[in-house]
Image (cartoon, rainbow, N blue to C red):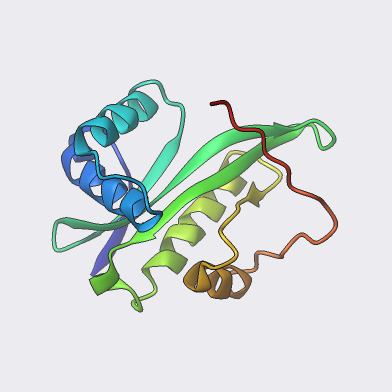
Length: 148
């Protein structure tokens, strides 16, 4: 049985391993120590909401939401920045459960919606998001400036 819970500091060790695996999937260098520090700050400072999927007392996936605001809608808007399920647990509907929890949180917080981005070559994500009612925005350009 899979449970979806809000992550706390008590989940930090296992959550950091999952977060590190997520980053490695995105071709970043593994760094458990920095992952732990990063997540500790997000949780301690209440800068993000992290939901974890637990099966047999083990974290098998997570999603992380960051608050934003929409000036035109004058409401909170959530950024679903991270979604990860360990490879050996995929195909069980865990991603859909995590996304549903994010949607529930959006409604509970009276936000106007959730936005996300994923790489064009992320076949799993690009197949998943339309199935859970996310719509590809083709009317806006997405620009990025990266500080070096």
